[in-house]
Length: 265
Image 1 (cartoon, rainbow, N blue to C red):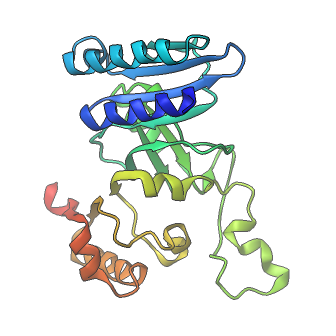
Image 2 (image 1 turned 90 degrees about the vertical axis):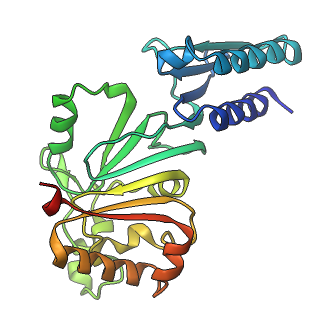
């Protein structure tokens, strides 16, 4: 077993024991340091179970890999976390779009959704969610926002799915034709999320390709916000399509909630 595998296995054990912990593990190829960032601070320096497991990790690492270096610390801008190898994302509660909670080993690809406490994928072109998070003074280092369809400021996506019948001269109408579409890594995030929240999102047919083969036996928590009965009926219909007419099976294997925001007002 090499050092990276040892650290990853150790962090998986910690993640399974401490549900509210956030973990980022990266390897700095410039300094050759294994860097592990832990948050929140009340767990890092206040949870006895975690501190015991941290010491065990550090002590075993020094014994097994005496010629390698490791740093276990709080989140810091001075750390080079470009090469993330593992992340554990604790649950969050926020009214906003599609929010994913996950714990996963990060594959080696560019444009990574990585090392954040939660991920929000936003399908409109505005900075509404950024404004909401700013208003509640949420730490920017703890979340990542991905504008799947781009933004008004930098360019946005407008069009149809790849399976739509479009004349060749109108190929630009395919959303995948746009350089502003940002879907790389999205299936990986969804597959590794434990809780997925849909807010202000109808699961419309033009976005079905984002969820191909996803609405199956996942053993996850799904929360769907809708507005009124018509919105609920439409969302159930979209789920029917996405599950290939297996809504009952989808419900058997997942914890599913529907929340009518019209009644919550």
